[in-house]
Image (cartoon, rainbow, N blue to C red):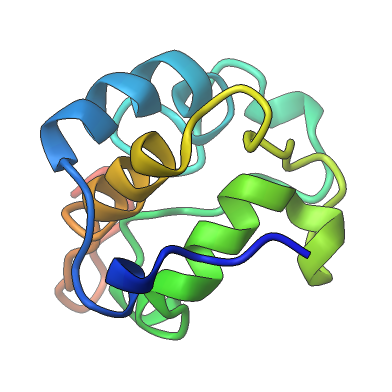
Length: 117
């Protein structure tokens, strides 16, 4: 079984590098802004997660996000459409994605949609 690096118990990774990897590997499904509205999102069921949803993201620890990214959705009881990136990206780069994901959530005001309208 793959394990998360020891440093992952605290905020981890290079968020700037993670942003670049997010644009390359994640935005096609999750969208450039992380709202689950990427170009492929309309063709996927279940729909990609909205990474800007502060409540949903707060329910996931860094270790859970790391494992999800590394091993894929099926390995953690989530959508099998979420690919495992562990053979493509190093642990360091996955840690960067976790750090970047932590920059996306925000609290919305009553009635505000994902796009801020």
